[in-house]
Image 1 (cartoon, helix red, strand yellow):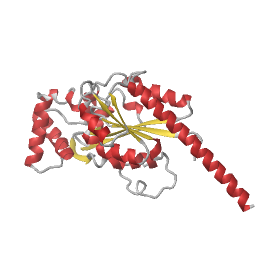
Image 2 (tube, rainbow, N blue to C red):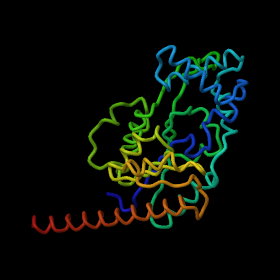
Image 3 (tube, one colour):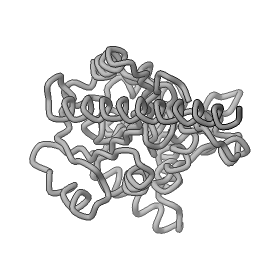
Image 4 (cartoon, rainbow, N blue to C red):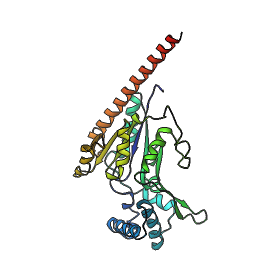
Length: 285
């Protein structure tokens, strides 16, 4: 057990950090559609073809660009990421929280676990703030550079797999052995995890983290508290908070308190383990 604990802050992306779905900023307008039109067509397409929701939107996104004559390349997707807008305070949130953790003897790591498109997230202003970004990805043709197949699709229940990966530092999504190996001392124990989500699609992750002794926070946009109230009342999350990441905000104060509590819990567990080791040695003499 390390003296300095590591705490993982794990985030959904759409409407948790960004104030809309990542496709809404420029990807969909470039297709000449409104978000309502695009997502309506996605729903119609996947229902007609009996497709899982994430695979459905990934495939429709690809063919919609083809029909519009837009090269569906990694570079194009990244270029749409630069237009993503975030809630207040998000842009300097990560550095501030890291500095706070350092000030009380805690190492902070940030992770994205999203059903959105990784190539879009890679192009956004905060992409370099994360230890790892887990999100849906395409396979791109080596000759044309255009996407031809979804190579990783992460739906709402599959997102929980990536909590295991963070806990075990099993970052290679193609490695199914390490993530399933038994591990007595996890790199980041569940009790040292904070999960941020915005609603129903994050319920599996929020519930799992909370049940395993970590902390789940449901954030909400101004005037939309009703969307997360039931999550708190149904004991699926520990806390709800406005999606305001500015210094001194309710969320900022809450997260710093949680980090402090986790640091104290770690210190007590470390002391307990040290005492047991000392007494065990005495008894074996």
